[in-house]
Image 1 (tube, rainbow, N blue to C red):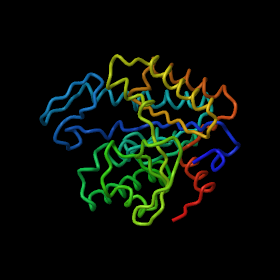
Image 2 (image 1 turned 90 degrees about the vertical axis):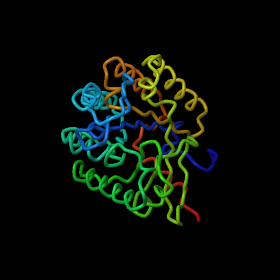
Image 3 (image 1 turned 180 degrees about the vertical axis):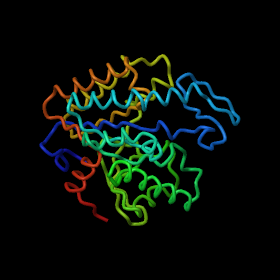
Image 4 (image 1 turned 30 degrees about the vertical axis):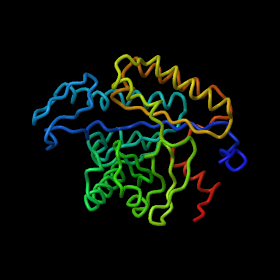
Length: 285
């Protein structure tokens, strides 16, 4: 797709998609009936067996109590629209954040009901999982989610089921920097690619990767796309329990300042990006 074929609404040079992942309160825990603890832990502590990891649970709770409100404040200060990929159960456990997401005009996109893998589910289980997520998100935010992001690994059925259930776009793709169409079983759905290299999760998976490293890399990624002026899209992924920590939040504020200081930049919710693409480039079978 060339710039002659596609452009952002006001001929902006680049679109920026800020994605806030809200998984806290839906991660694995014996307390929630799971067989073991959540493996994703900043300390890297994981023990197989039916025991609770109280330390990691408190790490996730920090995201709800402190990290979420801090990120919301930064987004408001810089007047940035964002997409919150939310687990339905996480919202049920934090109704104050559910209300704040809606009040600030951010999009609630589905990240499943629980933060769990879908590839292990059969088709009936996955369909029930999708519907449960939709119901929980709509009840807590007043928004019917129109986008979907899986926990890492979607199943062979995921995209078709989403199209059948009326989802407008799907995020489980890392193949490019512009939206495109897919049509599982002949049902069109917009694919809005995501990016992992700019995701703050790297600061948990690699302790040597600092907030400054993340800031420098994200700013360089933005500058490259801005200089190319080829209607590219940059995704910035963050988590309440990670980016909400003070030193990392400071880096986020600097990045938002860097992005919003430039002209001809569209900081947009993913649903708006998907709708603009669909209007500009209608699906053709």
